[in-house]
Image 1 (cartoon, helix red, strand yellow):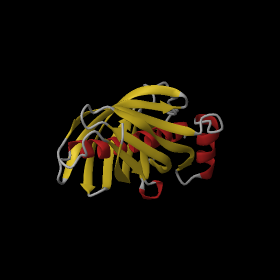
Image 2 (cartoon, rainbow, N blue to C red):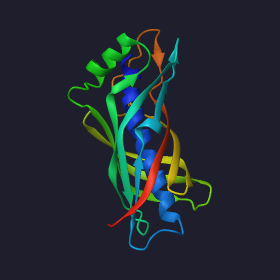
Image 3 (cartoon, rainbow, N blue to C red):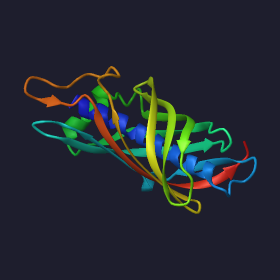
Image 4 (tube, rainbow, N blue to C red):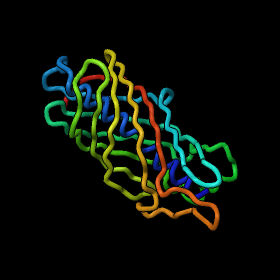
Length: 207
């Protein structure tokens, strides 16, 4: 149960940040990039989904988190990024009230750490429009107050100023120092699978 909640908190932040960096990378590669401007991607919490899956035996746990806000800027010339993607830790929901309560109060401690944050630093690889292309971004994921270097690969699709992002990745919660909830005959994997899909608006701003 603890693992599931941990997985949820990791999943939400990471996914959101991935989506943002992709949209920015796409914008950076577009021939219509305004000279001297930075690409700014603002994510829509309503159209963003952050799902997680924790494989275990004898059952599998599925749940989701909500995006609180997300804004990322990227320099098309250097790939440098700033901004942040913030997930609401208290929004974690796996459909089980007792399990979710323990996750929020005992594992995530949402009263002390209400946000799960991803801070992008650099786009190291991206494709070129039109159509859909992959992107790779390096940044820092802050969970329960602890920062972790993290690299994500995602797919980006742009239609005018509308950007849709999708990514799937694993969070090694046990390796990151989180408690392994496996007990006796109840076993779970040491990583949590996260799936994120987000929609955001692209604008161009001064450095």
